[in-house]
Length: 253
Image 1 (spheres, rainbow, N blue to C red):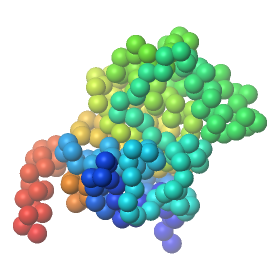
Image 2 (tube, rainbow, N blue to C red; image 1 turned 180 degrees about the vertical axis):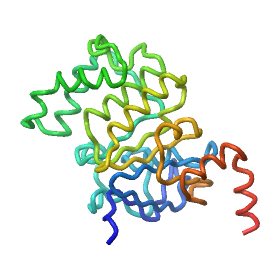
Image 3 (tube, rainbow, N blue to C red; image 1 turned 180 degrees about the horizontal axis):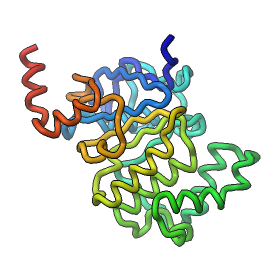
Image 4 (cartoon, rainbow, N blue to C red; image 1 turned 90 degrees about the vertical axis):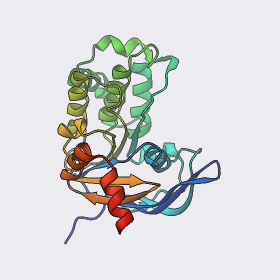
């Protein structure tokens, strides 16, 4: 008997400002699986990720989204987050006036509940996560992403994810703007969080992150739909030949 899906997308359609961008995506993620989503610019990858998290600027016009068997298509983003869905942003925004410590404590409290025993261990857990991601603990007193470099912002996204322990993580081009050392550190954090009980959908343009976060499945998104799925070798084929051979094969088909 196959393992029940942890996260499931059924024929999802998404529009932005009245224009359909995602034209029918279906995807199933089971516990412990890592899925990579690749595709050229403008194919709908970030639109899909934002819609899955419930961003109000992205209108779901068809299909359903399920988390642990529960339909979450209509519920707001904060409730999705409390149920264990996490989105790591491609462009994390600054929040001047709010320290990293207070932001993370509030996020963990909202996710786990104020009475959860883990709240008593918050400072210790935070210290461990700073060490995991090779971040100076002085970041705790800085304002969220205010004056952070691109790499620091991405590390903070993964630090937040590691504290929240999501059921399902959506990471939108977390590798963009990272040098090789930062990439390895971020990958270490992703692998530490996304263990045998969690799921991962990793949106990326490049093979290099997949050298460190080994996907079980790779999907190619073009014109708002998944046109091809396969194993890790599919990402290597893209690295070597680009998207043209795939497009040519679709045209012939």
